[in-house]
Amino acid sequence: MANSKYEYVRNFEQPDVLLPNTWIVVRIDGRGFHKLTAKYSFEKPNDRRALDLMNAAAAGVMKELPDLVMGYGISDEFSFIFHKDCTLFERRASKLTTTIVSTFTSHYVFMWPTYFPSVLLTPPLPSFDGRAVLYPSVTNLRDYMSWRQVDCHINNLYNTTFWALVQQGGLDAKAAEKELTGTLSSHKNEILFSRFKINYNNEPEMFKKGSVLFRDFEISSSAETTAPNPTSAPVPSDSATSPDIAPPAPLSKTAAEKDRKRRLKARIAIEHIDIIRDEFWDQRPWILS
Ligand code: ATP
Ligand code: ATP
Ligand code: MG
Ligand code: MG
Ligand code: MG
Ligand code: MG
Image (tube, rainbow, N blue to C red):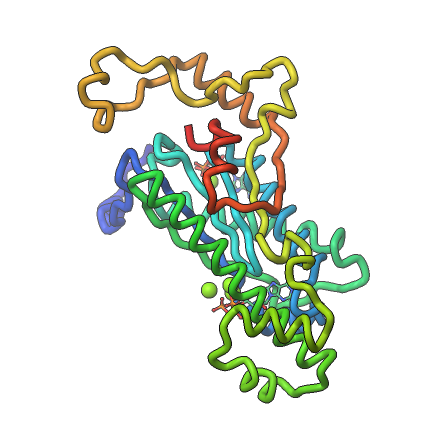
């Protein structure tokens, strides 16, 4: 590579390598979607087309980045999880975050006509911001996921009640907001049921639980009925004394490539289920293994 007297400016770049052996969550969020949803007349409180489009864009991201083990989406946001052993882009935060943000945005805009066939997209076009956050333990990571899913539930119960008061109750936004100030979940459930005959439990799972994306190895590869651990090699014997600090056993080059191909090939499952309780994780041990 050519050397020039300008080369020194390279040194102004600051390293942003993320701590090893920690789970990386990249969360992206739509910029100004309050305005965007009004511009394109999204159905309130939940426009199913828009959620399906978010999920399709997220599935596109998961397909292109086999290092991702999971995604979780609500409203205009998506969280993507890189395995703690991930070495993509030497774990540089800006490379990981910007790649996710731009890949997601490209898919979102590209697939817009599929989900909004009669709605022409015009500038300002949809855009997303993003950040990378590290979680050192599976407990922290699962608490993060639980935090997002609880947020989904709280927001959806509020929005469902708010829009019922506005759309069916004839209240204006200010009056509906006032009516809901300081109410508990049980009050909102009661308002929905007694005034609008809406049983919140019967609302669509996608609205109540958000969308969980993961690689479905068991269904996509029928030969592997026991779903072998896709990422870890045999544990080295010396790790028995200090399992928490032992470095991950590196995969051989061919094993790593085989694993990558397997991940690339796997179907991306999109489900709307509880990820707070153990059941989801117990039934899919390969996701965090
Ligand atoms: P910011 O740029 O700070 O994120 P924002 O306007 O995007 O600003 P958010 O807090 O991210 O603010 O809120 C997203 C908004 O988009 C909310 O008003 C939410 O109700 C709306 N929204 C997102 N997805 C949908 C959807 N599928 N259907 C209807 N409304 C949606
Ligand atoms: P990375 O993901 O690491 O950036 P890369 O393949 O994008 O990998 P770059 O160093 O960014 O690697 O190089 C960009 C490549 O695209 C070069 O091979 C360059 O010649 C080619 N390229 C970019 N713009 C054009 C263009 N307008 N016409 C022809 N080739 C181009
Ligand atoms: Mg934001
Ligand atoms: Mg937003
Ligand atoms: Mg948001
Ligand atoms: Mg390049």
